Image 1: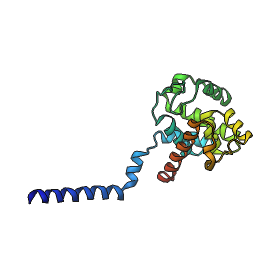
Image 2 (image 1 turned 90 degrees about the vertical axis):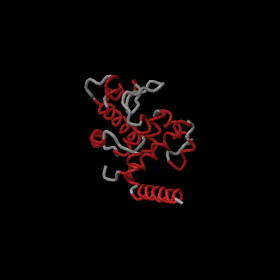
Image 3 (image 1 turned 30 degrees about the vertical axis):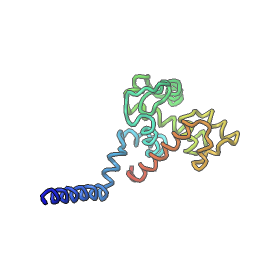
Image 4 (image 1 turned 180 degrees about the horizontal axis):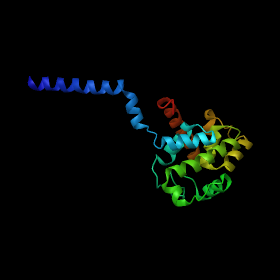
Length: 188
């Protein structure tokens, strides 16, 4: 009899905990989908007129907010920029004294350079954020070729037409995080 009572109390406790988690799902979702470096993201996004949720989503997809990351292809930092791309951005934007070590280890530098580059891509693709995100991954030359050839129309509904599987999944992942962040952090 005592064992049955203990099992009932345990079951009630589990139901209570699960119920509490569902009632307070916001904190759980924010725990699962945090935005680190919020001030840096907001500042860079504001500087270049880019939506901060999109910058946060790219960081999440690229490095999951871990500084010091270098990809097997050589991309660096939170926003995983290739050194040649970062050097091009530094030159075009007129940034002072940015080197690969700073890009790799300083979140503020990676966010600033990556956000400037995202804005550049956004402009190149006439404000099409989906095409800009695809270009962030595949390079603007590839995306321009797909759009000009009619291989892809630059829309999310036809993202399955993107010839590179990595880029197709990247765009889907970035916009999944983007939508999550918009829901969880509406005033970000």
